[in-house]
Each structure stands twice: as structure tokens, then as C-alpha cells.
Image 1 (tube, one colour):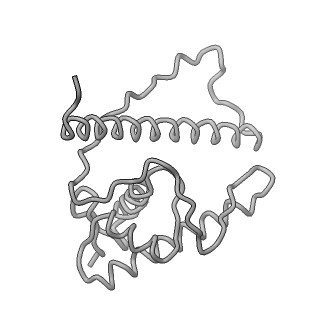
Image 2 (image 1 turned 135 degrees about the horizontal axis):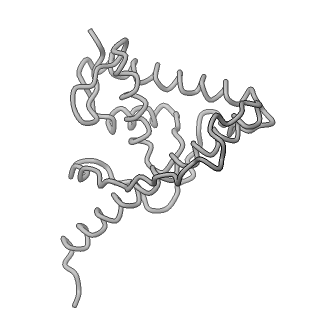
Length: 174
């Protein structure tokens, strides 16, 4: 029995959501491991002895909302688009890489602010990402729109520059 095109698309969407949830969980665990390693290198002792620590609970991935029909679908294979500037991965040997990543993050947020200001209206993170990518900016990971959405969401909580108006929709704070 063969699947109809609609059934195949539906299953693909489900699998993409599951993959995105797994990618988020993996990135979160890698972040915790990296943070633990950095703290261990800096000499900060573990406040809880290893014998008393229980098993670490594993967060179950939650399915995300279905992507909008008009939203662009990310390609399945990685693309090799040239970037405006090469970005270095932060390593233990290069402490300046962390400050370079922060500068790149600030540049990305400033560009997003310029884009929203020029548009004069609230925009979805996918629209903002399209314009950022057109400027040659990049974000790490499999889903740059989700990464941008997270960054904008975090800055909207302070309410200084951005204001969250809905799921993935941001405007400039008054």
C-alpha cells in the first residue's frame, strides 16, 4: 500500500518535528556538559558529592507546532553558502572566541532591530531570518529560525528593545 502525497507530507512534518525536538535536547545536553567541563577546569568544586547525586531526569521532547504552509521548508541536505565573515568555534584554547561569539550575537540582534525598524511593523522570526540571511549573517544549528526565535524571545523578556506579540512574532518595544 502506497501513501498519498498528503499522508507522506504529514509524516514528513511529524518526523521533522521529532528531529527538531531531538536536536534541541541534544544541544541542551551538550551545553550542560560543556558548562560542567568549563566549571571543572576553572576549579569550582561540585557542591554535591557524586555519591549523593541521583539519576539525572531526561526531558522528553515535546512536539512543536506545525509549520505554517507559507513558511519556507529547510532543505534536507546542508548547503554551503558563503558567509560575510568566517566565524570561529569557541574552544578552551582560545578564550577570545567567546567574545567573538558575543560580538557576532550582538551584531545579529542589532541587525534584527534595524530590520524591524525599517519594516515599521511586527514580523515573524522566519521573515526576520530571511532578511538577516540576505545580509550574510549566519546562525549555528539545523534550524536557524528556531535559534533566532530563542534569541529574540530572551531579549523580549527584558522588554528593552523587542516585544513578543505572538508565537515567533516580534516588534520593537515602544
